[in-house]
Image 1 (cartoon, rainbow, N blue to C red):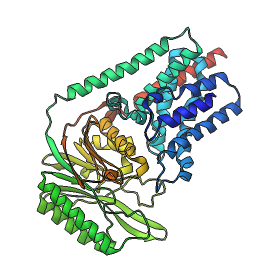
Image 2: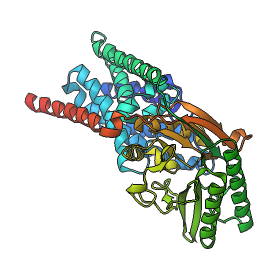
Image 3: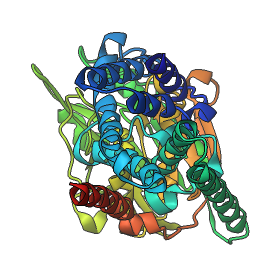
Image 4: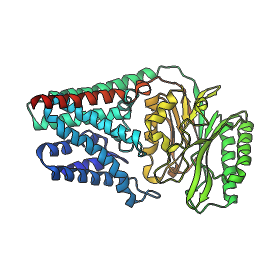
Length: 471
């Protein structure tokens, strides 16, 4: 029954349309199960049940091209990472004081999440913080400890509740953990309130939709791609007439044939120069059909007609046959922050911003705004767009995410949404937003996951030392 309850809570509180309140207690049944069972067989059953729970949660985002049969493959790494945190707590919690055991599970959950997006290509999917995307005050914690810091808090609350259930006469850890959660919310409220009084220039940006339906092979006819190009150029000109200083196309907004790429770049430069607007244009260039291979890139065309070197998508989605780009982007570190009259600009492409390190790299170059051409699918609308706003909070910059088949969103450095539109709502093909360019220096951009790693490692070391003393 505990495994079943845990599976229901995970499936209901994660990925798409999460019940946020359940995220705070989702780990309680798993911890209770480990406390009340013994043996390897029981632990294997827990890992299997957790994998099943994450498979069900992942099924909530299944729609073409992410089909149901792929859900277990995406769920397994998340389940294994979380199982590692649970099993470490199971091994060590009895050797620590209750408060330290609570902290052990919280930080272990955070370290497991950070390991997933730091050392694998699965990104930050499954992060506990993404179950709380509508709680903007709580999300401000990401400016200090990143999205993994939210996992540490949520995990600590769950462990404290489980300890109170196991030892009713020891409620102090629960009081402290819940008090910490309330304190974090208070911090977030104050941070947001103070920022409202900050003076910052406002940049008019436009997110431009595309008619492109390119998603693989067979490739469209050339006449079709040329029609996509003309529609994009017309919408760019219209956005400029409406007052936009920056226009962002989607990922794969068009397909550019290799033998036409020079002419396409020249046409992009002419459009930016004639409209007097900076353009971030996402596109793909087919390289081979057997096996499939293409470049997934973005070009920045400045208002004076200058076109910068291409930025290649650094983190292609698992299974995407794209050539990975240079992590430095736009030909080198010197181009990471593009100086404009209105501020500094940087670029990323869609899945790149599922990795917190990509935001920190841009923060290191004092970027004011990051343009993220993106392409999603129905199953991850709106959650994938909302996830990207957490990068803005972590690294202290504004965000413009123009998205094909998903949520286009513009947000400030505190994650406050200034405009959004889902592709599936129809209607406007140009979305305008006034985005405050208020660059914020955040602790997380400076120290990353280091504080969480230090607390976690010291807690583990203390447990091992106490165990050795007792023996």
